[in-house]
Amino acid sequence: MSVEPNVNKNDNNCENISYSENSEVSSNGEKSSVSITGSGDLEENGRDEMERKILVRKRFVKKVFTMVAAMFAIVSLFAAFPMMFPDFLTFCRVHWQLYYASTSLFFIIYFLFYGIQQIRRKYPINIIILMIFTFSAAFMIMFSIAFYDVRSVFIALLISSICSATIVFFAFVTEKDLTTITGLVYIIGVCTAVFSCVAFFFVFFFRWYLPFLIYTIIGTFLSMLYLAIDLQWIVGGRSQECPPNDWIFASLSSFLDSLYIFFFILSFLGWRSR
Image (cartoon, rainbow, N blue to C red; front, side, top):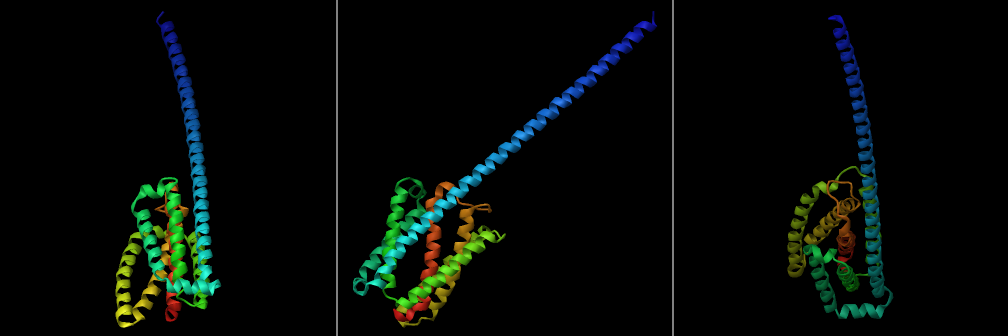
């Protein structure tokens, strides 16, 4: 009588143990399957999110470069007028006040875009203001190159185009994250701007052009560095990247970088013909 209950108890224990082991195995199996399924879902969701971000970034980059190309097409068309029509060249040199008017409008819109975020992000105001900015830049360049000889303009255009293409290639292939030195480059830019005031002071009052030539050299290399940084900032994948909804600001930045390269090279090559 005493043995049978023990056997039954042992059997029950065995059954319980077996059940518990099966339950544990089943539980582990469920957990592992849930874990695997959850991990797979998270991995797939992460992959989809990454693909979506890459697609958005590609569209953003395409939009930026298309806008920059359109801006340079307008500027090039206006810049060709003084070189193609001698009478218009004379008109630009006589009515030099229009140069200062277009330059003033250029810098006003420039500071509006850089200072007020709502303007450059709100459609269609940002497009309208960008077009006004583009035409003001075109008029400024048109009146500016009228004071240089054609040879200097073409040489400056050729050199700046080669430099810009080289910088684009370098910015895309290099593993160096140039966006990490934005603060340092900004400080150098402020110092260069202060030095430009000194250079123009010597030019206007003493007709001494050496500080001005040094300023153009520094400005050229600084603009090249700005262009490389902005390109990496636009393309993304670095420590700093431009948000996709700020494509107007990105277009403006890369356009100005290339434009400054041309202006500095033209100033260095053609200062004697002014």
